[in-house]
Length: 313
Length: 318
Image 1: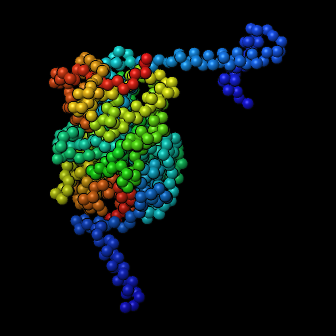
Image 2: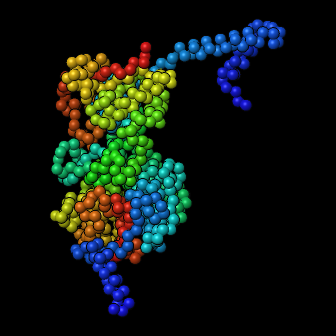
Image 3: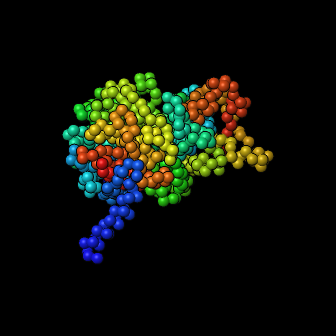
């Protein structure tokens, strides 16, 4: 056997052994890259949560238990990181959500410090808003955040059961989401995204649903129901977490205890899903954060496996 | 060089003596020194005798978020109503013990579950910590008390739906934000000092703890932690009053009861304060679904609920 043939055989074997187990027959979606492992060195992660991708396809990951943000290129090569445990500027106490505006500024929900911090793309601290409380601009555990096309920031204020909005200078703009105004109690929603139509998409984790609101907070649509395990159908969820929207307006949802990513239309019709690694191992895997790059690549953080997975469209 | 306070005091007393007893310089230096020493010693003795009194403050020292209400909610309500400052202490970081119904089935959101419902699932450690601290703050507010979180790590945490116990690799990896481990808290001086600082800050007249050697590890350890801190506070001259403990665990067994060791000596009538107690208890939605001991709804109280009983461990007021 010639060397070139041998290489082809080895290459084919690697493809079969390495890629096939993580491609799901139901969807054909395949993982093309995975990076990160438990640790505190650059490139290593401890319980990552949310993830965001900028216009240049740089990937920002909230490295929660390392109390920092890490920035990678689209192939997972480490670029830089910032943050440490603390309450001062640029420090974090269990950060959760992350979003990037049109100018590349980075916003981080510094969850247990009850504030949102703004950084340059290089991680330089710029501004902050928030403290513990119920007033405008105060928070009780900010979770997911998102930025719309006008650089308005939407923040899930989990234990105040509301969404707060801010401009790019972190000046308070508005709040909505009370039980009286939307008709149900959005109990500890975890992630938020902006639809192509400008509507706000909320993963209502404890209610196992996805809710869509207008920018002003009027409930437009609510869909999904509880379903878990082998019998879980498309459109059913078990604790949905991360949500992201692609260029067509389709919605990706991290379906936590079904260990899968579901793809839905903007109006909530189920399209397809694919499994992430870790089925039936709910303490070692957990797809939590999701982001879609400009080229359509999908990035998923696995909270308990301490890694980022990249999937091709 | 900066002088010590006793040196300064000695100089001041010398100056007073020099003014009071005119004499030629250096004529009786030994007499002067002896007189000064005598005065200094007697002033120290007098100061030691004038012990500070504890403040009108009641501190209840619970291991978990709802333990304060469970062990002494009525007593806390009664004393705060009388003008005492209430301190509502949660020792651990509450990383376990929060369960939610999988499918709430109504528009009002999930129901927390305390039952053995097959539809029950545990909530992750970090969220449990947040949920229970929020409930703690709300409960403390019912009494008008100050919530204090000492943030000692519990010996178990929830990762996903799996309980991870102290010492395991997964437990060590998770690194919940905590100062120390409650399982080991009584072994180290720095742990005890955290509580001593708390006593120094509030100087409470009444402190209530779980049963020493109590019915659960965290409860017993928390009680012992305060016991050690109380004694250390006494030795440092910090104004602390009485240490009471709940009558529970081994104090309820036959031997303790027959020998009288389990007999409470403090009886607090809390009949008028049960409403407050249960209002606070019902703030712990994750533990009782908000429908637990709802005295107001039932409008009847068991006889034993109207009296909260304790054993005096130390009385430092004499």
